[in-house]
Length: 107
Length: 217
Image (tube, rainbow over all chains, first blue to last red; front, side, top):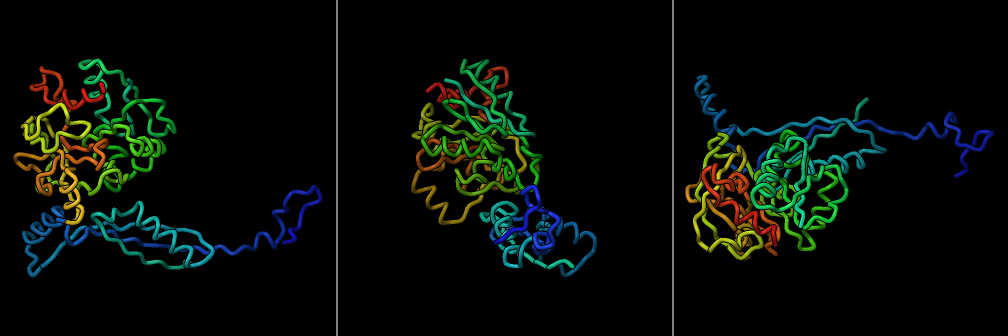
């Protein structure tokens, strides 16, 4: 590509063509939940407290984590790939946790 | 033969370990800051107990991304002895050097008490000072020490004699009473009990000495 250069030969950052690389912004919400086979003692204790509050009919209470993040990427696929890698390698431990992602493009 | 003790922000058993190794067993130690990128010729590595990175996200999760741990991984892969105690055990599972994970104690309590343990597998690097089926006493101090893994992994652990230590009276709900496991080669051991707190007779027992003495190698 023929990149316009400033008179001194360095990259001209003011050139509209180089500024115009489109970067999209996304917001992602990652939900991390203990796998069904893993005991959730905190959830059990909270469920017991809910019963003491007088809530009836409560069948299940499992505690997880919600992580909200904002990121920039060239497109939706790239953003999703980053969030999936992040979820699988850092935010959740697949040995004990499942995760899901909701990704939205920001205005 | 200098032993490296990895120090993370939030480690709190690093100095206890140095005291047990140097002060009682006369084994030289060196603290290795987690941001280092060299393990500097040490002959063994210990990941100490504590609350690395405040236990944020999951116990041991953030510590497993520390720059030094790439070196620890290479060291372990080439057969170097690596011991993880309590939070160190949690870090070893997050790092993938040991299978499974440590989750919240079944009764939700932080449990701090002496524990009777059964030595299942005396042939790995760290337990050869004990007799197979010997009962020993080491203290535990943890809120998240309930060992968990899937059934295939558990079968693997059993078949490869990786279940090194188990509780006589399971305090935390651990799968199959597991208190400590080693890797297949036997050069990486993770355990929830604290051997460094059972080295000085004044603390009520010295059953931890023989485990740490293996670093005299």
